[in-house]
Amino acid sequence: MRAVITVIGKDAVGILAKVTGICAGEGVNVMDVSQTIMQDLFAMTMLADISGLKTDFGAFSDKLKNLGADLNLQIHVMHEDIFNSMHRI
Amino acid sequence: MLNNTDILETIKMIQEENLDIRTITMGISLLDCIDPDIDKACIKVYDKITRAAENHVRTGENLEKRYGIPIINKRISVTPIAMISAASAAPGGNPVKFALALDKAAKTTGVNYIGGYSALVHKGFSAGDSELLKSIPEALFETERVCSSVNIGSTHAGINMDAVALMGGIILEAAKKTSHNSCFGAAKLVVFCNAVEDNPFMAGAFHGAGEPDVVINVGVSGPGAVRAAIAKAPDASIDEIAEQIKRTAFKITRMGQLVGAEACKALNVPFGIVDLSLAPTPAIGDSVAHILEEMGLEKCGAYGTTAALALLNDAVKKGGVMASSHVGGLSGAFIPVSEDAGMIDAVKAGALTLEKLEAMTAVCSVGLDMVVVPGDTPADVISAIIADEAAIGMVNNKTTAVRIIPAIGMKEGEVLDFGGLFGSGPVMAVNKFSPGRFIGRGGRIPAPLQSLKN
Image 1 (cartoon, helix red, strand yellow):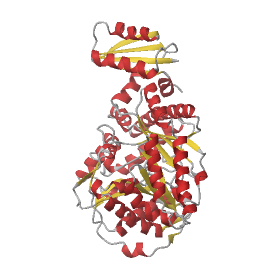
Image 2 (cartoon, chains in turn yellow, orange; image 1 turned 45 degrees about the vertical axis):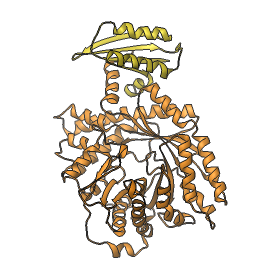
Image 3 (cartoon, rainbow over the protein chains, first blue to last red; image 1 turned 90 degrees about the vertical axis):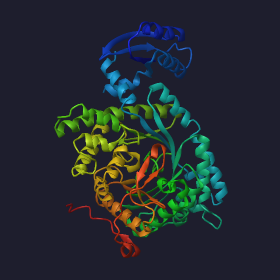
Image 4 (cartoon, rainbow over the protein chains, first blue to last red; image 1 turned 30 degrees about the vertical axis):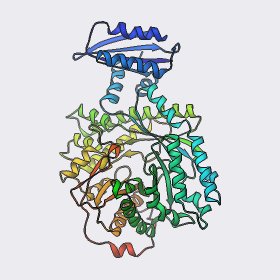
């Protein structure tokens, strides 16, 4: 099972490290990372394998959301199927 | 790997454009709860609903987390109660007992509304129907979460004008009984022509007799996302706008299909339909009126509104149909006045009148919805508004409905505030001439001809 983690906000030092740190702690394997700067917003998307997740999906998602709130960033964790169903026929 | 632009587009639609799943509604048949003893029947009704929907709300909440998309409402619809109460209509069989059982079941399962305190009387009244109709104001007063609907006409049967005449008074009484609470009773009551059996939206949802025992129906939303898509191309021709709406509707509906299918898997219940709907809320940026204005109308209600709405409604369906394996319900754009920030503004500015709304209902989903009229509007005028709206549905082979709220003690221009998703409605002007003799005649309007269409 794979999830897409998106981080949107103002660029700062160590965002990637902090997000991947939580992933590692929860048993989530980051498979792909890409980042762009849109206007002056930092946008990072990560594809992560969550089959080894130690907690449940909601708790993992809340953890990253709280990190986002601390860093003044929007962090979303969403199952990849929502993107597949919306953008693939 | 998924494309970054697609991922960010989805996030933007959810975060900034208020894209959401409006409702996951579990339809539950109560036909096996019939009992000549009304108290026994009520216990069976409560038990069946709480058993079938035990995990309904929790499943919805889990899916919200998993897909990162808000699911605003988790609801239940049941078999029209008149069918169940008919068997227990013996003396002492007050159908309000069923409403109380439904309300209790809604609270136990955690759903915010339960629909189905309903009767289908388009051709006439059978046992139980009249009793139920008479009890509607009391049922809506006594309960918090129960919604009621009555089907008074259809293309195949014509319009039951006796029922139309009754409904005017019933709506007025429902408003009067709840006048301490923004006349909210009337907001939980819908009068239909050509009611559908699989509608997931309140207040008109009920579980038709031809439906499976338990089923999940999904209603999607997303006026904000459609408006934003049109705003990206300010100089586009109408053809391009139609194309843009179709693309957006496809994406919105795919999401509904996904969430519906996953909910069914989790609950082990068959999947009913996705309702291809654009359902507004009073939140800024979640308005159907603003889509029409984005197309180039100064205000919703200006000449051109009906044409723009026809285009919107058709494009939403065309885009949505391919995105879902089963489409149904009301499917189309909703125009509930009090629930749509753009409609509220248009009424306040004098751009949108009851007459224009009536014309709009000929080309879009449903009908006169969440319309607030002066509290001294006579019952026969309300009945005549219902008759006009039902005639549009009957002749055009579509569902039309009336959810009208007489604002007791209020005059034209004042504002009735419901709060929350129901918003606030400016009291609209009503034609003062009397339809009394027409409504007083009773009888039935014969079903219209299905050929010689002009």
